[in-house]
Length: 333
Image 1: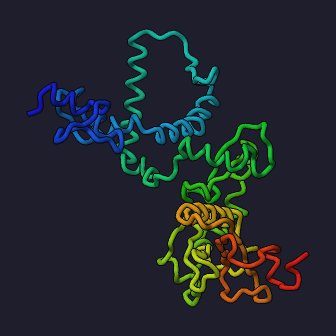
Image 2 (image 1 turned 90 degrees about the vertical axis):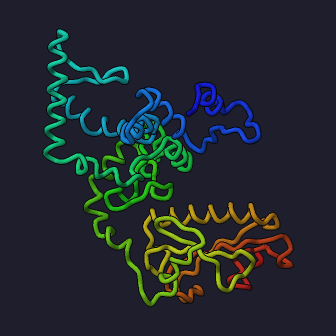
Image 3 (image 1 turned 60 degrees about the vertical axis):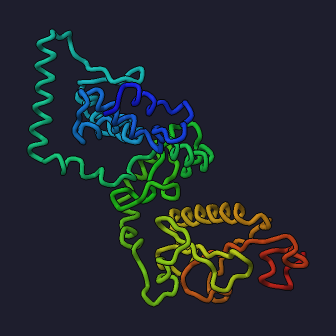
Protein backbone atom coordinates (compact mmCIF):
# COMPACT_ATOMS: atom_id res chain seq x y z
CA UNK A 1 0.00 0.00 0.00
CA UNK A 2 1.19 3.49 -0.78
CA UNK A 3 1.30 6.11 1.95
CA UNK A 4 0.43 9.78 1.54
CA UNK A 5 4.13 10.67 1.57
CA UNK A 6 4.98 7.97 -0.98
CA UNK A 7 2.36 9.20 -3.46
CA UNK A 8 3.34 12.80 -2.80
CA UNK A 9 6.95 12.01 -3.76
CA UNK A 10 5.78 10.10 -6.83
CA UNK A 11 3.77 13.10 -8.06
CA UNK A 12 6.51 15.62 -7.30
CA UNK A 13 8.15 15.80 -10.74
CA UNK A 14 9.98 19.05 -9.95
CA UNK A 15 12.31 17.39 -7.46
CA UNK A 16 15.10 15.39 -9.15
CA UNK A 17 14.69 11.63 -8.97
CA UNK A 18 17.02 9.76 -6.61
CA UNK A 19 18.53 6.45 -7.60
CA UNK A 20 16.01 3.62 -7.25
CA UNK A 21 13.18 6.04 -6.37
CA UNK A 22 9.78 5.60 -8.02
CA UNK A 23 8.75 8.89 -9.57
CA UNK A 24 6.25 9.82 -12.26
CA UNK A 25 7.86 10.21 -15.68
CA UNK A 26 5.33 12.02 -17.86
CA UNK A 27 5.03 11.43 -21.59
CA UNK A 28 1.47 12.82 -21.46
CA UNK A 29 -1.05 14.11 -18.89
CA UNK A 30 -2.65 10.69 -18.46
CA UNK A 31 -1.02 9.55 -15.20
CA UNK A 32 -1.83 12.59 -13.01
CA UNK A 33 -5.34 12.85 -14.52
CA UNK A 34 -6.02 9.20 -13.68
CA UNK A 35 -4.70 9.53 -10.13
CA UNK A 36 -6.77 12.69 -9.66
CA UNK A 37 -9.91 10.89 -10.90
CA UNK A 38 -9.33 8.08 -8.41
CA UNK A 39 -8.73 10.51 -5.54
CA UNK A 40 -11.96 12.36 -6.38
CA UNK A 41 -13.91 9.07 -6.39
CA UNK A 42 -12.88 7.66 -3.02
CA UNK A 43 -9.94 5.78 -4.62
CA UNK A 44 -12.09 3.86 -7.13
CA UNK A 45 -13.28 4.76 -10.62
CA UNK A 46 -14.42 2.93 -13.73
CA UNK A 47 -12.41 3.13 -16.94
CA UNK A 48 -15.24 5.20 -18.42
CA UNK A 49 -15.05 7.76 -15.64
CA UNK A 50 -11.26 8.08 -15.96
CA UNK A 51 -11.66 8.48 -19.72
CA UNK A 52 -14.15 11.32 -19.14
CA UNK A 53 -11.61 13.09 -16.90
CA UNK A 54 -8.94 12.80 -19.60
CA UNK A 55 -11.40 14.07 -22.21
CA UNK A 56 -11.82 17.32 -20.25
CA UNK A 57 -8.18 18.14 -21.00
CA UNK A 58 -8.40 17.37 -24.73
CA UNK A 59 -8.21 20.75 -26.51
CA UNK A 60 -8.88 19.13 -29.89
CA UNK A 61 -12.30 17.98 -28.66
CA UNK A 62 -12.99 21.47 -27.31
CA UNK A 63 -12.05 22.90 -30.72
CA UNK A 64 -14.25 20.34 -32.46
CA UNK A 65 -17.34 20.98 -30.37
CA UNK A 66 -16.80 24.75 -30.35
CA UNK A 67 -17.05 24.58 -34.14
CA UNK A 68 -20.07 22.29 -33.81
CA UNK A 69 -21.88 24.78 -31.56
CA UNK A 70 -21.29 27.58 -34.07
CA UNK A 71 -22.38 25.52 -37.07
CA UNK A 72 -25.37 23.56 -35.78
CA UNK A 73 -27.34 24.24 -32.56
CA UNK A 74 -26.26 27.89 -32.27
CA UNK A 75 -27.64 29.07 -35.64
CA UNK A 76 -30.77 26.87 -35.38
CA UNK A 77 -31.75 28.09 -31.90
CA UNK A 78 -30.94 31.67 -32.93
CA UNK A 79 -33.24 31.31 -35.93
CA UNK A 80 -36.02 30.09 -33.60
CA UNK A 81 -35.44 33.14 -31.40
CA UNK A 82 -34.60 31.01 -28.35
CA UNK A 83 -31.04 32.27 -27.99
CA UNK A 84 -28.96 35.26 -29.05
CA UNK A 85 -25.19 35.68 -29.36
CA UNK A 86 -23.59 38.74 -27.81
CA UNK A 87 -20.25 39.54 -26.19
CA UNK A 88 -18.94 36.14 -27.33
CA UNK A 89 -21.65 34.31 -25.35
CA UNK A 90 -24.94 32.59 -26.16
CA UNK A 91 -27.80 33.96 -24.06
CA UNK A 92 -31.11 32.16 -23.47
CA UNK A 93 -33.92 34.61 -24.28
CA UNK A 94 -36.31 33.67 -21.49
CA UNK A 95 -38.15 35.38 -18.66
CA UNK A 96 -37.08 34.86 -15.05
CA UNK A 97 -37.49 31.28 -13.89
CA UNK A 98 -38.13 29.83 -10.48
CA UNK A 99 -35.81 27.13 -9.19
CA UNK A 100 -38.48 24.48 -9.82
CA UNK A 101 -39.15 25.75 -13.34
CA UNK A 102 -35.46 25.67 -14.19
CA UNK A 103 -35.12 22.12 -12.77
CA UNK A 104 -38.17 20.97 -14.74
CA UNK A 105 -36.78 22.32 -18.03
CA UNK A 106 -33.37 20.72 -17.34
CA UNK A 107 -35.14 17.41 -16.69
CA UNK A 108 -36.97 17.77 -20.01
CA UNK A 109 -33.63 18.31 -21.77
CA UNK A 110 -32.22 15.18 -20.09
CA UNK A 111 -35.30 13.21 -21.17
CA UNK A 112 -34.96 14.41 -24.77
CA UNK A 113 -31.29 13.40 -24.79
CA UNK A 114 -32.11 10.00 -23.29
CA UNK A 115 -34.94 9.33 -25.76
CA UNK A 116 -32.70 10.17 -28.72
CA UNK A 117 -29.87 7.99 -27.40
CA UNK A 118 -32.32 5.10 -26.99
CA UNK A 119 -33.71 5.63 -30.49
CA UNK A 120 -30.44 6.06 -32.40
CA UNK A 121 -27.97 4.36 -30.07
CA UNK A 122 -24.90 5.92 -28.47
CA UNK A 123 -22.56 4.21 -30.91
CA UNK A 124 -24.40 5.54 -33.97
CA UNK A 125 -24.60 9.09 -32.60
CA UNK A 126 -20.84 9.39 -32.22
CA UNK A 127 -19.68 7.22 -35.13
CA UNK A 128 -18.35 10.23 -37.01
CA UNK A 129 -15.70 10.70 -34.30
CA UNK A 130 -14.02 7.46 -35.32
CA UNK A 131 -12.00 9.61 -37.69
CA UNK A 132 -9.67 11.45 -35.29
CA UNK A 133 -8.47 13.72 -38.05
CA UNK A 134 -11.70 15.75 -38.16
CA UNK A 135 -10.59 18.25 -35.47
CA UNK A 136 -8.01 20.86 -36.45
CA UNK A 137 -5.82 21.73 -33.50
CA UNK A 138 -4.93 25.33 -32.75
CA UNK A 139 -1.28 24.66 -33.58
CA UNK A 140 -2.09 23.12 -36.96
CA UNK A 141 -4.51 25.95 -37.76
CA UNK A 142 -1.75 28.46 -37.02
CA UNK A 143 0.70 26.58 -39.24
CA UNK A 144 -1.75 26.54 -42.17
CA UNK A 145 -2.56 30.26 -41.89
CA UNK A 146 1.14 31.09 -41.51
CA UNK A 147 1.97 29.05 -44.62
CA UNK A 148 -0.75 30.90 -46.55
CA UNK A 149 0.60 34.25 -45.31
CA UNK A 150 -2.56 35.12 -43.39
CA UNK A 151 -4.66 35.46 -46.52
CA UNK A 152 -7.53 33.60 -48.21
CA UNK A 153 -5.98 31.55 -51.02
CA UNK A 154 -9.09 32.09 -53.17
CA UNK A 155 -9.67 35.86 -53.00
CA UNK A 156 -6.42 36.89 -51.22
CA UNK A 157 -8.34 38.85 -48.58
CA UNK A 158 -6.60 39.53 -45.27
CA UNK A 159 -9.47 41.53 -43.78
CA UNK A 160 -12.23 38.91 -43.53
CA UNK A 161 -12.48 36.23 -40.86
CA UNK A 162 -10.29 33.29 -41.86
CA UNK A 163 -11.25 29.62 -41.75
CA UNK A 164 -9.02 26.57 -42.20
CA UNK A 165 -10.77 24.10 -44.46
CA UNK A 166 -10.17 20.58 -45.79
CA UNK A 167 -9.40 20.45 -49.52
CA UNK A 168 -10.75 16.90 -49.64
CA UNK A 169 -13.69 16.70 -47.20
CA UNK A 170 -13.32 14.44 -44.16
CA UNK A 171 -16.43 12.58 -45.35
CA UNK A 172 -14.45 11.55 -48.44
CA UNK A 173 -11.54 10.37 -46.34
CA UNK A 174 -9.58 13.61 -46.46
CA UNK A 175 -6.99 13.71 -43.66
CA UNK A 176 -6.31 16.58 -41.28
CA UNK A 177 -2.73 17.23 -42.28
CA UNK A 178 -1.19 20.42 -43.58
CA UNK A 179 -1.20 19.35 -47.23
CA UNK A 180 -4.97 18.83 -47.17
CA UNK A 181 -5.75 22.08 -45.36
CA UNK A 182 -6.15 25.52 -46.84
CA UNK A 183 -6.92 29.03 -45.59
CA UNK A 184 -10.22 30.48 -46.83
CA UNK A 185 -12.15 33.55 -45.75
CA UNK A 186 -15.65 32.82 -44.47
CA UNK A 187 -17.25 33.92 -47.78
CA UNK A 188 -15.09 31.73 -50.02
CA UNK A 189 -15.45 28.80 -47.63
CA UNK A 190 -19.24 29.06 -47.83
CA UNK A 191 -19.15 29.25 -51.62
CA UNK A 192 -16.75 26.30 -51.84
CA UNK A 193 -19.05 24.18 -49.68
CA UNK A 194 -21.87 24.69 -52.16
CA UNK A 195 -19.64 23.52 -55.01
CA UNK A 196 -18.16 20.39 -53.44
CA UNK A 197 -20.80 18.02 -54.79
CA UNK A 198 -20.67 19.42 -58.32
CA UNK A 199 -17.17 20.49 -59.33
CA UNK A 200 -15.31 17.80 -57.44
CA UNK A 201 -17.69 14.85 -57.31
CA UNK A 202 -15.80 13.00 -60.05
CA UNK A 203 -12.60 13.23 -58.02
CA UNK A 204 -13.92 11.19 -55.11
CA UNK A 205 -12.90 7.94 -56.82
CA UNK A 206 -10.10 9.36 -58.93
CA UNK A 207 -7.84 9.64 -55.88
CA UNK A 208 -7.80 5.84 -55.76
CA UNK A 209 -6.68 5.40 -59.37
CA UNK A 210 -3.64 3.11 -59.80
CA UNK A 211 -2.18 1.32 -62.82
CA UNK A 212 -1.03 -2.24 -62.07
CA UNK A 213 1.44 -2.02 -64.96
CA UNK A 214 2.95 1.26 -63.73
CA UNK A 215 6.36 0.94 -62.10
CA UNK A 216 5.71 3.83 -59.70
CA UNK A 217 2.17 2.74 -58.74
CA UNK A 218 3.73 -0.50 -57.48
CA UNK A 219 6.28 1.26 -55.28
CA UNK A 220 3.98 2.84 -52.67
CA UNK A 221 4.84 0.13 -50.13
CA UNK A 222 8.55 0.97 -50.45
CA UNK A 223 8.11 4.67 -49.67
CA UNK A 224 10.78 6.38 -47.57
CA UNK A 225 8.24 9.06 -46.60
CA UNK A 226 4.74 10.07 -47.59
CA UNK A 227 1.38 11.69 -46.90
CA UNK A 228 -2.17 11.15 -48.12
CA UNK A 229 -1.52 12.09 -51.76
CA UNK A 230 2.18 11.60 -52.41
CA UNK A 231 5.13 9.45 -51.40
CA UNK A 232 8.90 9.59 -51.79
CA UNK A 233 11.47 7.01 -52.84
CA UNK A 234 15.20 7.07 -53.48
CA UNK A 235 16.05 7.44 -57.16
CA UNK A 236 17.40 4.10 -58.44
CA UNK A 237 19.91 5.95 -60.62
CA UNK A 238 20.82 8.95 -58.43
CA UNK A 239 22.44 12.02 -59.94
CA UNK A 240 23.89 12.82 -56.51
CA UNK A 241 23.80 11.21 -53.07
CA UNK A 242 20.29 11.34 -51.49
CA UNK A 243 18.58 12.06 -54.83
CA UNK A 244 14.85 11.56 -54.10
CA UNK A 245 11.68 11.28 -56.17
CA UNK A 246 8.35 12.66 -54.97
CA UNK A 247 5.50 10.78 -56.63
CA UNK A 248 1.73 11.52 -56.53
CA UNK A 249 -0.16 8.42 -55.39
CA UNK A 250 -2.84 8.83 -58.05
CA UNK A 251 -1.74 7.50 -61.42
CA UNK A 252 -1.41 10.45 -63.74
CA UNK A 253 1.22 11.21 -66.32
CA UNK A 254 1.47 14.99 -66.22
CA UNK A 255 2.17 17.42 -63.40
CA UNK A 256 -0.41 19.69 -65.00
CA UNK A 257 -3.13 17.08 -64.39
CA UNK A 258 -2.66 17.27 -60.61
CA UNK A 259 -5.27 19.15 -58.62
CA UNK A 260 -4.10 21.88 -56.19
CA UNK A 261 -4.39 19.56 -53.19
CA UNK A 262 -2.11 16.98 -54.80
CA UNK A 263 0.44 19.63 -55.74
CA UNK A 264 0.36 21.02 -52.20
CA UNK A 265 1.02 17.61 -50.69
CA UNK A 266 3.95 17.16 -53.08
CA UNK A 267 5.32 20.55 -52.01
CA UNK A 268 4.93 19.63 -48.34
CA UNK A 269 6.79 16.38 -48.90
CA UNK A 270 9.56 18.15 -50.83
CA UNK A 271 10.03 20.50 -47.89
CA UNK A 272 10.11 17.63 -45.37
CA UNK A 273 12.73 15.79 -47.45
CA UNK A 274 14.83 18.94 -47.82
CA UNK A 275 14.82 19.49 -44.07
CA UNK A 276 15.78 15.87 -43.39
CA UNK A 277 18.58 15.82 -45.98
CA UNK A 278 20.18 19.07 -44.82
CA UNK A 279 19.94 17.99 -41.19
CA UNK A 280 21.70 14.68 -41.84
CA UNK A 281 24.21 15.89 -44.41
CA UNK A 282 25.94 19.21 -43.72
CA UNK A 283 27.74 19.06 -47.08
CA UNK A 284 24.49 19.80 -48.93
CA UNK A 285 24.41 23.48 -49.91
CA UNK A 286 21.66 23.58 -52.52
CA UNK A 287 19.05 21.64 -54.51
CA UNK A 288 17.78 21.18 -58.03
CA UNK A 289 14.05 20.51 -58.20
CA UNK A 290 12.81 19.29 -61.56
CA UNK A 291 9.98 17.64 -63.48
CA UNK A 292 10.24 15.94 -66.86
CA UNK A 293 6.77 16.36 -68.37
CA UNK A 294 6.28 14.32 -71.57
CA UNK A 295 8.69 12.21 -73.61
CA UNK A 296 10.01 15.26 -75.46
CA UNK A 297 11.01 16.75 -72.10
CA UNK A 298 12.84 13.57 -71.11
CA UNK A 299 10.11 11.72 -69.18
CA UNK A 300 10.82 7.98 -69.28
CA UNK A 301 8.19 6.67 -66.82
CA UNK A 302 4.61 7.80 -67.62
CA UNK A 303 3.72 8.67 -64.03
CA UNK A 304 4.28 12.22 -62.80
CA UNK A 305 7.27 12.57 -60.46
CA UNK A 306 9.43 15.35 -59.07
CA UNK A 307 13.21 15.08 -58.71
CA UNK A 308 14.83 16.50 -55.58
CA UNK A 309 18.57 16.53 -56.25
CA UNK A 310 20.90 17.66 -53.42
CA UNK A 311 23.85 19.78 -54.54
CA UNK A 312 27.20 20.28 -52.87
CA UNK A 313 29.80 22.95 -53.34
CA UNK A 314 32.22 21.88 -56.08
CA UNK A 315 30.19 18.85 -57.25
CA UNK A 316 30.56 20.20 -60.80
CA UNK A 317 33.14 22.60 -62.15
CA UNK A 318 30.60 25.29 -63.15
CA UNK A 319 27.05 25.02 -61.77
CA UNK A 320 25.83 28.29 -63.33
CA UNK A 321 22.64 27.98 -65.33
CA UNK A 322 21.38 25.10 -63.19
CA UNK A 323 18.23 23.64 -64.69
CA UNK A 324 18.90 25.44 -67.99
CA UNK A 325 21.50 22.75 -68.64
CA UNK A 326 18.75 20.44 -69.95
CA UNK A 327 19.57 22.14 -73.26
CA UNK A 328 23.38 22.39 -72.97
CA UNK A 329 23.92 25.24 -75.43
CA UNK A 330 21.42 27.37 -73.45
CA UNK A 331 23.12 26.85 -70.09
CA UNK A 332 25.23 30.00 -70.18
CA UNK A 333 23.55 33.36 -70.76
